[in-house]
Image (cartoon, rainbow, N blue to C red; front, top):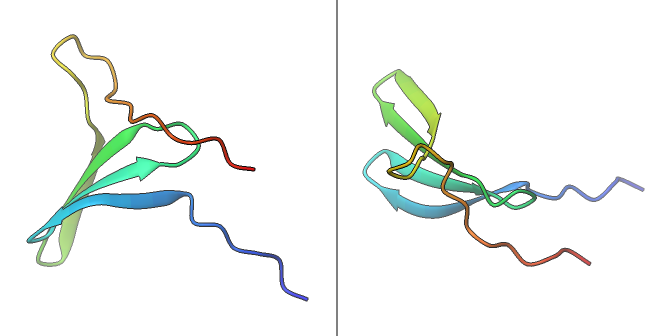
Length: 60
């Protein structure tokens, strides 16, 4: 029997090679941009420099 694979990240928004991912365990939002053969990932921050956090439901 194979162990269940849970996806840790969900795609909150997608638009032409730009994605916002949310970590389902912490709620932290990440911005990923893909252009051609390269891409970049960074934590989204608010005006005060704190990570943008989306409330996540507790997993059962």
